Length: 213
Image 1 (cartoon, rainbow, N blue to C red):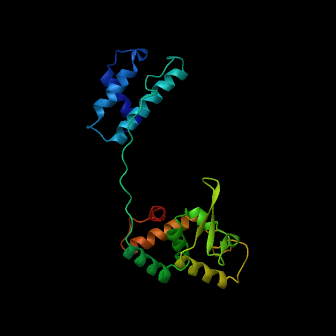
Image 2: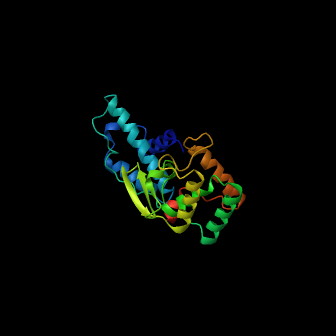
Image 3: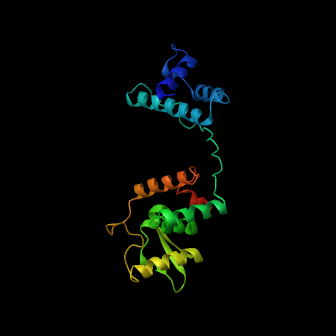
């Protein structure tokens, strides 16, 4: 339902003759409480936002001094537990990538064994990969820090093969596109979706590996 639909239901409940400044917080809380069990918790939240915005507009236009919908806590819906791939499903995915999407294969391996975000992997530089110590340092822009972790053997082997093929560089991006520029994230997502559809794992996405790790 649209915000306009939410407000129509609310007005019908309050009565068209009631003045806006006569609506109290108790009225709004009672209305939202009565919705429980009739609609989803997400929809209850939508009603609350629509009502709060309506009163905010009234305040901006000088019709009201306070918003009776402010300060009301609406219970957030419980999100389902994320579906994680099994060891066999991960093996099947990597085998398919290695054969049919060799450019995507090492990126996915890195995601699986680090739990990193795609952007963190695509901006990974050779200066942050230490094969001697078997360590890798991620630059995490979202939390503005760096995270140093041990490379699992499969990840170490994949990155080492790329490093050797690239001439053992000391600097620059690990994962380069065809024009030696950073790879396009959108293209990576699209390519991955085509892969998981092909192997019957269409529910899987690149963010899943953060939970898996």
